[in-house]
Length: 139
Image (cartoon, rainbow, N blue to C red; front, top):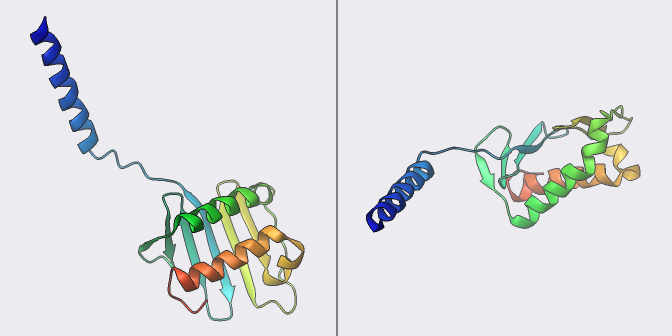
């Protein structure tokens, strides 16, 4: 009986090791894809829930826990607007236009729209800070 139990434990251990090493390769979902166009060219930020950002389709950069929490909050705060496919036309005097694609839908707005929409202002600020501090771009 003892040998049977020991055999089962060894078999279970080997199966667990095989499963762990087989590389299930589960990938975290993207939180959002932010595209900013305007002065200075186009900026794209692909933010993943694993804690990475891809800047302008380049390689992934690790981000701090604080920035990941900010990105998650931003995605949550924009979910309703995305579900409603909020589209604010570019206003005269705008410097930047934004397009944010989330799982729920897409939002478009300009920098002139941020004064009346705190969540859009948060998105614009996130783009600037991530461009400068994570991507090493001018902003």
